[in-house]
Figure 1 (cartoon, rainbow, N blue to C red):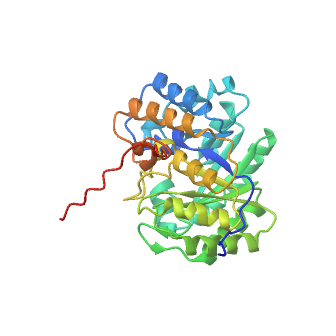
Figure 2: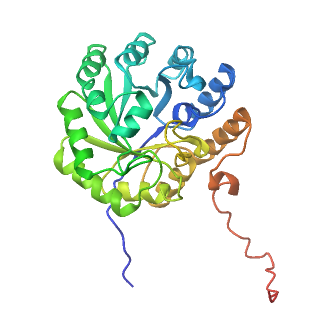
Figure 3: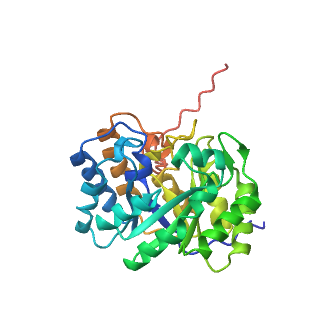
Length: 319
């Protein structure tokens, strides 16, 4: 019997975004607890971690300690630590704190861009060249994250051609990589295939990653669709934490442990230890003080095979 076997990449790089995206909508936690979570994440084998965000502490009080977090990241030199910024000033602060790899967010939706950073898409795009210059002068790298790449909470579906134009402009002005963000967790696999294909055809020489939220339960399916479309860089958050404070209804990211479980089961190498991710999720749950949304975490990890010698209750009860 023939078996459908799509061509998948041999390896996918996971960026853990729990310390930034995962915590940004939470009540602020003590620096010691945050570092405890970062230490647990560092032990999972993940090699890229978005540690914090250099944005206004008034807008995102949970990340007001960005410089303090950055000061200790040198304990784990094997990890490529990065930070998200939303302005030139944010980039300057991040670089001054010793972070060399930055993500700069541009919302493809004008309305969301104004709600998120107080300026329109065109004005945000206009800052890429200056930020790229600062980062490259510090021997760093700049990834542009295109938010609301599929849908906006205020304007509805984002036109594909608008996303392609934003990504192409970012690349022209110095971005080293692009990440497409499903900010409010509304997209589906077919739309993922279509947009990734369009962006890759317009900019074939640039790395395209993806960032999915699980708001409507399609996040992990969308991650697989992205991998099927050739994406080899995905974001995920331990325990499924996260959400955008400026996008109504946006809930958590896809859970790191669920993404590892999916990719391992598909024969795709991630270099991330699933048991240690579950251990990190337990730390996350304890320090934030509420249950995590991750289904895999709640289930207790991978399925345990039944003991064939154990009797099975075959009693059938009518309902």
